[in-house]
Amino acid sequence: MDESRLELARSWHLGPSPETRVMAATSIALIRTMEAFQREALSMFRLVSDADISFNEVVVLHVVAMHDRPKDAASIARILDRSDVSNVLYNLRKLSSLGLVEKAKDGAATIFRVTESGRELAHRYAAVRRRVLLDTWKGQPRALEGLVEVTFTLRHMTGVYDAQTRELASLDPGQFPSSDAAEPAVSGARRRQRR
Image 1 (spheres, rainbow, N blue to C red):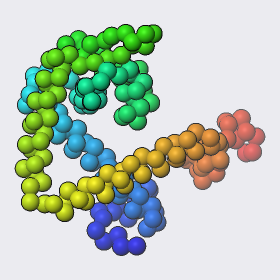
Image 2 (cartoon, one colour; image 1 turned 60 degrees about the vertical axis):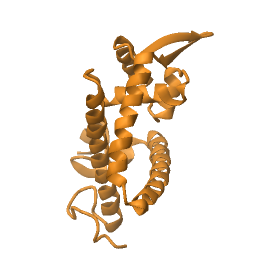
Image 3 (tube, rainbow, N blue to C red; image 1 turned 180 degrees about the vertical axis):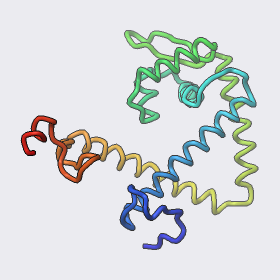
Image 4 (tube, rainbow, N blue to C red; image 1 turned 30 degrees about the vertical axis):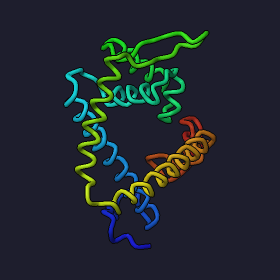
């Protein structure tokens, strides 16, 4: 395995072996990418609006506007692979208070759709994004092809992380070493009995 292209902290607790070093470097790269993406998205939004909203609210606005079709909060959360529907509802309330989305009823379900102001804002954002992205990637067709591969890799990684989360939920914390000793964690009473 060629690790030479990766920035690796060889003594880091998350990377004691070559394989775990690569995984740790990937984790840091994902975190840095997400942080940079959030800064970029908020910078773009601030070019088209002076509304004080968070990155999650920018994303939720675009998902509500997607395909120009109303959606309920659970569908929005599924599209974004979020498990915190209550926070999605908070994002929607904030967007609604700014006049960018509105609540409606579809039978018994509550759905959300973009207002005319929200649609206009989303389209202005998209225009800025197109211009900036096209300028950035102009003359780099191979880089764009590489993004297709990155997208498939990230989708695969999402599935892997989701599967690991399900597996972690079924594990017993007692079978792993505690933070202060290399032995399984046990209750205070059982620890005292062994002394």
